[in-house]
Length: 428
Image (cartoon, rainbow, N blue to C red):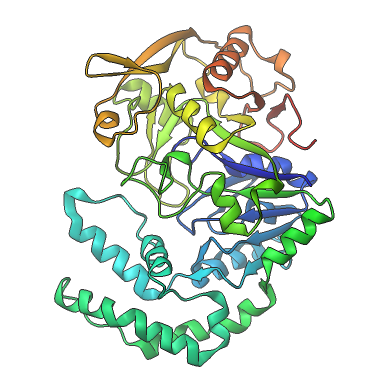
């Protein structure tokens, strides 16, 4: 019953796509369990680069069945655009399964997201404006539209009308926007129904049967631990649960079936959007990390904020996810620094704090306490084993492992599919 959860252990953008793709040949199913097209994975296969937003990374592995779980919110126009792009490049997407219980991002969800964020001005959260938050809000408020609703026009119409009753009041009276007509929304949504039909399935049943048959199922989180709606840097978070518990609710698989939880750590730290970031750099080092690491959001197109590795965050991710392993990515980006600072604790109101503060105010005022480790100048992209790494690079990895609270079982030493050092197998 080998069920694995793979998730971001920082603020997202850690390289989850590379890790998922690495495991693809050993995995029977790859499942997205939360988020929507606000996530972004870049996977490099040979000389081909693929940018995935909504689709599971396993879609690039022919032997694997990619699944969009019930916890995901789906924009059909984005889904079909992404499928078309892959089909044009010769990727077979016919095995994709989509939960009939997944919620649909409607045109009015996107409109509400954009006008609300604009209205907040300086207080904005930094959303992607893709309707993710309003769709999850509709889900919680029980006025959401699910994939299965597209196959009953009467129910779909009733639900759209109910959702728009309040939203049109908001749009016209608060935001001075034109009201949205329910009939037009229903008509647009119905155009997706037949094309979606071959993919729609009872994915909860499919996945549980697969696990009972000892198939390998990988649950792939979008975003990262510090963007979790409950356990992240609220309110500067996403609208779902990227943490390990979200895999159970977002895919319909019980926690007793999860055998391993793998956290993806970048060898430094980045984040996109607003919110506190203790190790953020505003100097030449920050610019160098951004340039060398190609730190631009796959989904947003925005430059990522860059900083040194934060071991406090890594320890927190280990705790709230129950991590069994880490996959350390982008170690090669640090090549060339004589010394590399690592944040080992924070200073808050003159006191040393070694665990992530639960108070938003305290975290906002946290100042990093650094220890400096020796760097290396040798090219590591051709390294095939841990012993191939320069001694200082080995020491850096071991130091991060000791500080973070879980073993580092794989290391990314370059962007390519084969530029990975596997220390311990994730499939056992």
